[in-house]
Every structure is written in structure tokens, then in C-alpha cells.
Image (cartoon, rainbow over all chains, first blue to last red; front, side, top):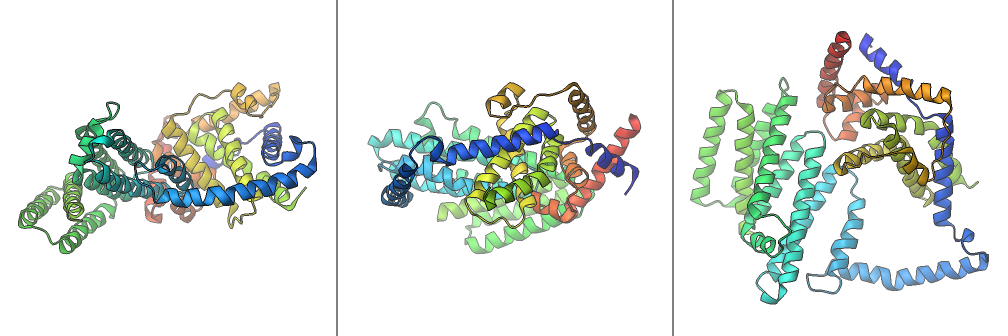
Length: 282
Length: 165
């Protein structure tokens, strides 16, 4: 261990909870939680607990579980739709601990909202619902961007943003209608620009943090492999095949110029375009 | 005292200092670090007292602390005061000696402020919290190689800063 490491360790030994803070915090946690959990302090008749607890269980079993189950299958306009998007899904999110899981969950919710939007978009009497789903789509997109922007740079950030970009671009027409139904939401163009900017930013920062590493060349190889795999799976039309071919040539030229940042940007945009076409077909 | 409470107190006594230290170093705001430490252990107590098993409490607490830090930054929830903490049930009377200690703590934490966030994060986890590279990689969901590179670069930056001082 060198001098700097030792100094850092030594300095950190000076940072701790004062004993008075530690004790006060412990008491506060145990006291507050007991107050929340124990009905004894509120109701002076202990027998009441035995009556209240089974009653609560009965209510939960009779109402809570079926409501939750039914709401998971609800669509905009159903009585339980608000319950699903505001309560059930929010609670589910708590169980996704890592940022990666949270982003994937928001992507899944984004896809679900789009499916729902397709069901209600054409109905002229469903404007409020269309606006509601539009607002939700904007919110999930913003969450994905925020999490990707706030955590440590990783290639997973870029991949998740590329998927989000493809989903949004593939459904841009219908999202445009939804966003226009609510004056409080942004335009589809600004959402697309926001995602694209975040992808570029993530790549720039990823490159600046990995200047000497082999990670970037690994990432480029992985991207090219992804593109080939997507292309094989996607039954692409000729226009897209030509586009991919051109983009790979452009990426190759950038590699020769040692411009790794733009290489990754080109490859990400290509992946996004292929995924978009896949979403359009599905 | 039931067995859950005993278990909680043992874990709290063992790890509350290091979780607070980690948060203070990352946030550079003592009151906010106190608040989040209390929040993390409150949740931990609720989780534990509901009878759920936690295989590695230390890893669980670091993950909670890391998530709480990310959320705090995202929400820009930065205005904290002792009055606010007092409202939440944490009342501490500080002596004159305490105030001196708090100054020393502040100086230690501020020494890292010039280092970029991405390096600061791993330096804190490695040298302040004493986590192994493998544990940091798992916490941040990155490869061990990436973490090692960041630690190495962070130390180089820190060395320059120390030399300038």
C-alpha cells in the first residue's frame, strides 16, 4: 500500500458517527418503528389487537389480492387502470434494486403503455386517456434517461438508451398524437433529441474514462456482432441492408481515423435503426 | 428484546459507522449523510423484523446506501438541517469537543472533493469503506478490470492533488 492509500485510510478513520449520534439514531429507529408496528400504544385494550389483526387480514385477502390481480390485466378506461399504473407498478418498482433492473422495468412499462395507447388512440371519445398514457410514456422515458445519466458510465447505459430510442422512434406517430393531447407534455421531437443527446453523452464519457483500455475495442466488436445478429434475425428489406452496409463502412473509416467516439455513435445509431424496424414489424 | 431486535442492534453497532462514513464522503454534507443513514437502517430494521433473511447484511447495507445516494443526487434533495433531523426524531446535543471533532471530519472528507466523481466513488469504496475490488464491481455492476483501472487512475489524480497541497 503506497503513501496516498495509507493517508486516505488514516483520514477516513477520523470520520464516524459521534457516540451520542449513534445512540440517538438507534433509539429513534427502534422507537419510530415500534410506534408504527405496535397498535398497543394506540389502543389501550390489548384484546382489540386480536380482533383488529384478523380483520385486517380478512380485508387484505378479500379485497387486496383480487384487486391487485385484476388490475394487472386492466387497460386504459378500466376502473382499475389508475390503480395499476399508480399503485401496483410503483410498488413493483421497489423490488427492482439495481439501476439496471429499474431501467429495464421502465422499458417494459414503456412498451406496455405503447400497446395500451394503440388500443385507445383511434377512439375520438378517449382523448383524456390518450393524454394520460402519453404523459406516462414521457415519464418512463425521462426515468430511463435520468438513471442512465446519474449512474456510473457503462456500456449497459448505452444499450438501454438505444433500445428506448428504437421503441420511441418506431411508435413516434402514435406518441405524437398522445403528447399533443396534453399541453403539459413535451413534443415527440424533443423527446427523441433528448434520448439521442444522452446516448452521445454516455458514449463520450465512456470513451473518456476508458482511453487506454481494451474495453472500447471489445465494445466495438460487440456492437458489430449485435448488428450482424439483429440483421440475421430481422429479415431486413433492401433499403435497410444498404443503410447498414453504409454505416459499417463509415464506422470502419472512423476506426482507421482512430475516432472511437464517432465509431461507437455510428454503431449505436445503426443498432437503434435495426431495432426500430424490428419493432415496426412486430 | 426479541431475537430480531438483538440481531438488528448487533448489525447496527457493527456497520452504522461505516455506512455513515461512506455517505458523508460521497455527499460531503454531514446532515444529509446522517439523515440517509437513519433512513437506510430504518428500512433495514423493517425488513429484518418482518422475518426475512439477509445473507450478507454488509453488502445489503452498501447497496441500500449506494441507491440512496443515487436517488438523493437525482432528486437534488440537498437542503438538510439539524432542525429537520430533529423533527424526524433524531435529537443530539453537541458539546464543544464534538464541534472540534466535526471540523476534523469535514477536513478529511473535503480532501477528496477535487477528484472526479467517477474516481472518487471507487476510491471511497476501496480505501474508506475497505471493500475488495470484487465487491465494488458487484455493487456498481461493472467488471473488476474497470474498477481496478478507475482506482489506479483515481490514485494518480489524488497524488497530484496531495502534491499540489
